Image 1 (tube, protein in one colour):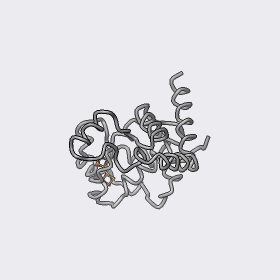
Image 2 (cartoon, helix red, strand yellow):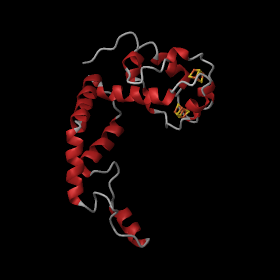
Image 3 (cartoon, helix red, strand yellow):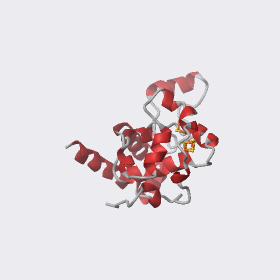
Image 4 (cartoon, helix red, strand yellow):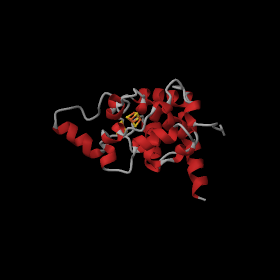
Length: 172
Ligand code: SF4
Ligand code: SF4
């Protein structure tokens, strides 16, 4: 497993972004709609991200809707959301993923859709005068095989299996 050094941001592709520029003014948190309804404290998250890898299993990473309010308003022009997305990617590669997110990934692997169509939506499409199936892999089965090949070629399936094993380990 990859080990992180003094701070996870050192390892990020977007390494030029220095969280130490943060002056902890709190503009980001005050602008954050998710923070009003969850425990997400983006100001605190930026501070933690610059100092430690403990952030990888932090639940708050997944409470951000990526609305970019905080990033647009940050007086230090820190790419807050881009940093967050990079950390999420590293987190998943380290095996941390919500069970609900893993289910969505498995759906994508099997059906080529994160949310496959169901009977109810098929009927509603017809009622609306649409074709029963959308112009996606639902309609074109060859396309589904291509999507599966693409996902396999980039190791997506292996990645999701890896997260399963990590989640299981963490629960024991
Ligand atoms: S708005 Fe920018 S500078 Fe202010 S606390 Fe948030 S990240 Fe730091
Ligand atoms: S991008 Fe995320 S952290 Fe920033 S304001 Fe929106 S929900 Fe909050």
